[in-house]
Each structure stands twice: as structure tokens, then as C-alpha cells.
Image 1: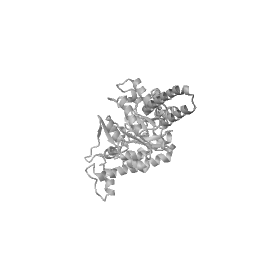
Image 2: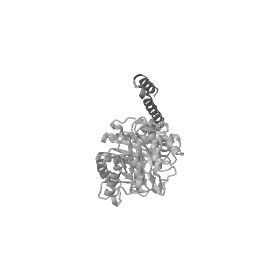
Image 3: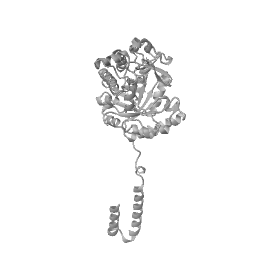
Image 4: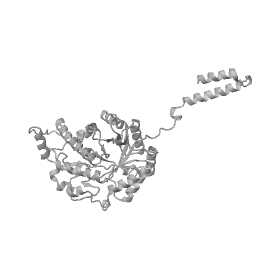
Length: 416
């Protein structure tokens, strides 16, 4: 500005007619004042809004718990259409829940005695094929989700027909309460159990044009379990006859079981890649401390071994300070330097409404720290199960995702 004014004064003194000097000088002074005021305004008042990132995960989990979105073809089709209109780009349809597959499965028919969940709305259909077809037509990535992992209802056909597959506590009890539901856990160390789960995974990878497959903490084991005869015998064999600690949180006993689960995760990863090398292996766990201590799921190690290609970290917290603290842990930052790491955000539960403003704030917190994106648990609570009006909720997501963007894929040149 100084140089501009100096140049103008020189211009007036050297080349402008004397009678017009005063008027021109007044104009220049006015322009300089306007420029000074403009330069003093906040930067964001002078620039355009930041454009959406070139790639951002915008996902949502589709489950059959407290939701019927998967139980009717037209309802499912309309849901995928609306997600596409709101610029979502990824869906995680559940394929293994309540001890049944939600797609016609030869593996399940052979082991369980039923090829498909008995829910009436799934009969005569292949729900997964519908999601893949409709989703891809609308530009959505489809990544099936093994929600129950090694868990099953205590009264399920699987639990009744394969009691030797179940694991237990040190006192022999097997039931694990999840809310009001009674669950049991398949023994993740038993070779027959491992074969069954891996066969289900490979069956999906081979038979459907999916973009990836996703596991979560349930691909581990509650840490109080693991005292069944098979596992105890295996431990003794590897420890010169010594039995495992009666303390389920004993560090060596925790590490031994976690390592066994890691070994199985590695074999599963290898089997997936042998069937379809461009199938993304995704994991959606809780924070590392909880996953490892309570579920023996050492995702930090999985990620460092290269057997996780996409991480969606579940941070279901209302308190923004606590939420953001979880984003800053060293293992999270380390993972972000290797693979796309996104944040799982709670959009609500059946009896717990989460305000759209809280959702927006958490999305912004993830964006501020350059995470790869966000995913919401779960579809029904985006706008159907909420105290807020559906249109207001949808308007909120429209503002969050104003334009389409690509799914951040490690296998297609994604860089941290």
C-alpha cells in the first residue's frame, strides 16, 4: 500500500495537470482507506468456503437390530437412494447376526442347518445381492459387516447344535449378558470354529461383487472367557503343562489369547486376498485400550502388520472433550500415517436420540484433524429414530455433505 501511494504521489507531481491534482489525490486517498478496511477484515470474509476434500469416507452401518431397512426390497432401495442424494458414499450392510447369515449361505446351511436368517422379510431374497446391485448403481461402496463376529445368542441353533464350540469362564459359565440378551461366544481358538468363520467370509468375498469386508471387536473375545477345555489344553501344551492364570486380566494370559486371535486375523486376511486381492479389509473397533483389555482385539498390532487396510474407530461419546481426546492417542496418529482412518460417530440408538448439532460438531472435529472421514451408527437413527424432525435431520446431513466425494481407498492411490 505504501508503494502504491508513493507511486500515485509521484504521478500527481510529475504528469497530472495542476488543476486536477487535488481531485485525483482525494480519490486515491479514498481508495487507500477502502483497501485498508478490506485488509483488516477476517480472512474468511475475503475467501471462498473451503471445498470438500477430494476423498472422504461418508459411511453408515445397516443393521437388523432395531431396524427393518434390510427386510423389504423397496425400503432398502429407497434408503440407498436417499443416502446417495445426501452424498454418502459407503454402506456397511450386516451379513452375520443373531447366529444366522442374512444372505443365502451354503456354509451356514451345512453347519447351522439353515442357510438364512428366519426373518420373514429376508425369505425368497438375496439381500446382499440387492445392496451390491442397487448400491453400485448409485455409486456407493458396499462393505459387508460381520457384526456378531464370534458371538451368538445363547438359544440359537448354532449354540445348541455345536456346544463343543463354545468357550467359558474359569467357573465353567458361558452366558455373557448384553443388555437384556443372553449371549455365548464361539471359541476363536478352536480350529473348527475358525474354519466356519473363515469359510463364511470367503464365501461372501468370492460370490459377491463387494468392495471390502469389515470386522469389529466381536472378532475378538471377552477377556473373562477362554477357560474351556480345548483352550486350557492348548495353553498347557505350549507352557510345559502349566495352566493359565485364574485372573482373566493377567498380562501374559491376555497377551497369549490376543496373539492367537491376531494369528487367525492374519490367516483370514490372507484368505480374503487369495480370493479377491482388491477387497479392502476393514476393521471398526473401539479405542485400542478397550479393544485389547476387554475383547483381546489388538487392532494396533493388526494395523502395524499390514492386515488392516481401513480403520473406522468407534468413538461413541457425548462429551466433546472426551471425544476429541480419543482422536489424539499415539496409536491413532500412527495408524493415520499408514492407512485411511475414519471416525465412527453415534447418530443415536433406539431409546437415545443424538442431536444433529452434536453430530455436526463431531464431524467437524474429525475433519479439523484430517481424518479420512466418518461413519454413522446406525442408519435408522440418521433421521427415522430421533426426537428431531426427519427433514431437519436430513437438511443437517445435506449441509455436512453438500457435494459428492470419493471413498478414500488405500488400494487406489490414497495417501495420508
